[in-house]
Length: 402
Image 1 (cartoon, rainbow, N blue to C red):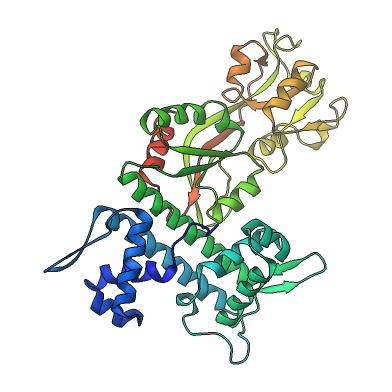
Image 2: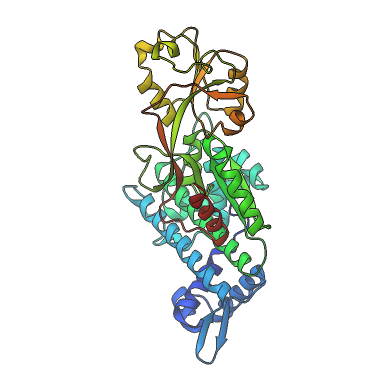
């Protein structure tokens, strides 16, 4: 993280030149010489291999690429400023320490060290991750503390902890980095080049059919698009989403929403069913009773999932005690397929999620209506997140493929 970001002062200079309509007024605002700003703009344009600003007799005008980049850079700088403000809220500065508006003095090297420490909690591991020496990372971290006037890193027996202020600032800095990445991708795509990477957090339902269909559609429209799909427990995916590592989540929505800085967008209502191997004794019956279900062992959904909540509603503790044998807990469809296929276990599952296994004759739905078994499937993304054009194509297909 922060390994491919231009100098932050260059980015600020670019935004100010666009805002002020010229280099002279921007130089007065940012306290840099006009040659220094001219050089900063030249380096930025060299980085993107395209013109960002056009200078004429009437002043400065943004090019198409410059317009795209300006919006993202402004948002990124705003996030860094917000992070600085929130980190300082209720946090005592060291006596006589810190700079006013320290967020305008922070360097990419310092943000890179902060991001690595937030991940590794260890200076040696952070240095290895960044490909730098440990003294370099340690120096950048201490320079950050000097600028902010706050203690940000605390040595512990296990390594290094971030203070609450550092955690707050690190999260906003990570979101600023994600915003810049979005901007770089938009500029590249506008020039007919690499449209960047889409990172998706996929929960079990989305991995079966909905997401594969959408990805195939995206490949036809944007053959250069890169996509990375991450599968992990919900809490881990949510944490990475909130830190800008993941662009959006696809899967079962939570009720109530987990936190107010994310938005949940429903796509479809997904009814649940009781599923077993295709030749299970209950599958061949015309009707199945509640007591029939209690006569077999179960594989249950992962804890703290919407499906597990439905399972508990369907089978309260006194009913679960009547089930033979111990329960198996898993959210892995691959594991479920193997376990169900070789046993009499039952499970609570979306029939859509097991569509391929049912079509191939491996699994089947037990004829017992699960009247309260329904989940909302949808998208979860950061509040205020603005997708790139390529991301928007994928999202539109997900919204229209219900």
